[in-house]
Length: 114
Image (cartoon, rainbow, N blue to C red; front, side, top):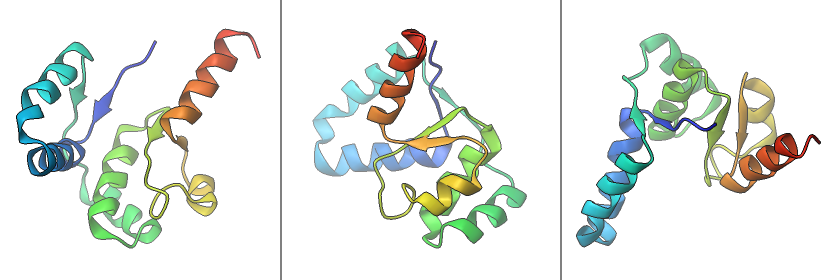
């Protein structure tokens, strides 16, 4: 029902955070990525990066948005309120943008027929 796809910059950023905050957990991250059947996409092309930079001024997050845009997902999941979880950005994207909780609520409604 759910396929998780990460852009290469998302994976790199996540690994850097784990390495910095709790390096002993790196094997756990690898295990979670494996059992979750997480796929890593290729980097986004310049056309996506240019479009994303018009929507998100913070360059590292613009690259992440570009990767999402190139994948054309059903959902982009994040906790980043400052750069991503903005009403104006949600209106500009052709996919759903929300928190993990937003996705779970959506799936619950879909599964219950609501």
